Structures are given as C-alpha cells and as structure tokens.
Length: 233
Image 1 (cartoon, rainbow, N blue to C red):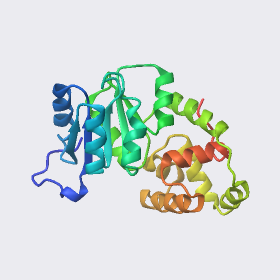
Image 2: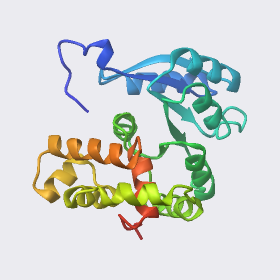
Image 3: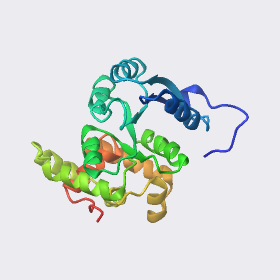
Image 4: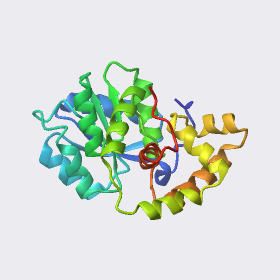
C-alpha cells in the first residue's frame, strides 16, 4: 500500500469501483478497506441482483467487486449480466469457496480475478490495481486449466488473418508475449529482457494492435492457442 499523502489524488485518476455484496456490514468493511489508499473510489453499492445491474449500468465503473457467495447463490450468475450493461467494466470476485469448477465457470463468464477470503487484505487492493491495469488475478494452476480449456475450444474462422498477424510480430514482441504467458507483470518482463517498463508498455500496445486483442487475458488466450506461450504446469 502507498504511504499516506497530504493531498488526495485527482478524482479522474482514481479507480471507480462498485461493491456488490448481500451483507451491508460486509460492504462497509470492503469500502473502508479499498478506499484506505486514496487511489480507489467506491461509486456505488448493491445488495441484490437487481440493484447490482442497475447501479453498474448507471455508473459504468472501472471495476465491480463481487461477492460470488452471496445474493442468495446468484452471485456467480450475475457476472454476464453486469458485463452486458457495462462492457468496459472488469469484474473481480471474492469467495470463500475453493471449488475450482466454480472458479473456471466464473472465468468463462468473464471474471478477471478471484480473491479468496483467507488472503491478506492488501491482496485485494493489489488485485483491484492489477485488473484495472488490464492484468488478471488468478491462481496459476487455475489460469492454466481455464485458458487451456478455452484455447482448445476456440476455433477461429480467420486462421489466415491470425497467421498474418503472428508473422508481423517482431522477435522482441514474441519474447514479451512468452513472458506474459508465464504470468510476469511489466516490471518482471522489463527485468528479464533488460528493457524499461515504458518500453514493455510500448511493445504491448503494438502487440495488442497487431493481434487485435484488448487485454492481457485475451493476449494469453491467443498466445496459448497459437503456441506463442507455454501453458504453466
């Protein structure tokens, strides 16, 4: 977490979050936790399925923090509804369940990260920041399982187009993609390739444009499907 600053960050720079949890007391605790750094602003709350859809549609937040265990067992099924009304939003789930099947279903529905309740509070703030930056927050074994399944199931109707896109990649861009596939963040990629984080971001911008993907998750799926990165074991 960042040290306390005397001046709050500009509201335009804050990560706009909607909290979705069936328990008001739990929402109050989450609000206190995620806003403690000053970098995250809670712009709405919901305690029911219907409230969640309405608030997210109205606020169009950067991120929805969703309790997957609440809402009378409907939390998981809410994911696709939220993304329908706010396609640019990203969803981060909180759960006490270790059911990998449920986790895989959540990712297939569009969730970008899962935080277990047993994890340290700082992990929740870090997960929000990472997902806002376009990364994913998933256990490595879950990532391998889900993305491996998705890569096998996806069949492109534009194989030639994708092949041409891959051929346009530079050697350095292929190295960046392989590192992303291993789960490295921008700092880790920069250290491995002896380049700056700014250069890594420039490479990723070029890669996203060439491969017509818009996030790290889409890039990883594409990379696994085409052998540009190895699925972690």
